[in-house]
Length: 450
Image (cartoon, helix red, strand yellow):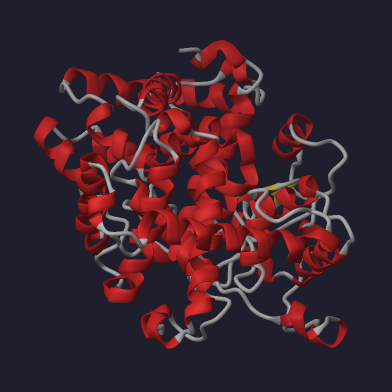
């Protein structure tokens, strides 16, 4: 009976009204078809520079290898799946899959800036690097085109400028950009003098308690990365978080916001540091550079949180809403897992609250966070909605494992997920599933109504 259902499933069209509750298994069946192919603005399973075995590629849940013939990129493969997703995305965008070449083999035809590598990002493809360069060199950057490119990953050396643009901190008009950044950085400096560099006697009791809580949380931030143990780094985080909290009294400081500042700190410091993050020393930089980095972190954090203010106000209703939607989405995608979790008495709030509160920063290796945030920032105002699909894809990576666990085992497993050895390949699979499910369900906008 099971084999008959699987046969019927393969015959179904890619339509949101015929989604099987075991779609996660179907995804594994089609991963070979998707390998090496991309869609406008979104990437599915792409061939990477990571050291993978040439003959087999495994998904993160280790359900088996794909056949050699499935892992080879092929323009002759059946395009029905790709065509369906293309019809749901921007019809005017063009896929860059046929243009993909390594930047090394094309070094004679690209500028020195474009040749710079970005390990673990699809942005190493020379064709995409040229597209980034073209967009950024325009007098006025077209943000929609930049978002399309950034969704698939941003070269590390371009990431600071692109993140500033995607968040609306830096204006698209190149003539205004330098002046706006200079003014914003001076505004931040004024805030430091007005709110931070003052004696406690000039603060309210609430402000004193908030500053103390931030001072306690900063040393706990990303504890497994030595860079964040530096006193200067923790002091910079403290200033950024305190000023943000003072200027956003509706929420004030909430634990978890400290994690959200870390990707910005690393990305903007990367403009002034070389080599591995393990060798970076914040204290080696002049004070004016540190102030500029802090200012960029502050303004970009503010822009990010502007779109999810109710995630951090009293009772954090925005996050609770996302947890509810995640539970409903998992039920529709993988009913056996949903039923098992319900039977065991596991509430989604027990594990997913932290996922949404910290945007998965604590759940994956830190070296993958900036790649994940490329996609976050490319989503723009749609990010809160897309977070539900990313969380569902992340959770169902271990669907078969979860079915074998009781309540206590599931709690322990979900609090200590085996992601410490993840590479960019596993993260791309999570993003691929999230995009596919979003494309499927997006035609039924009421399916996750709260």
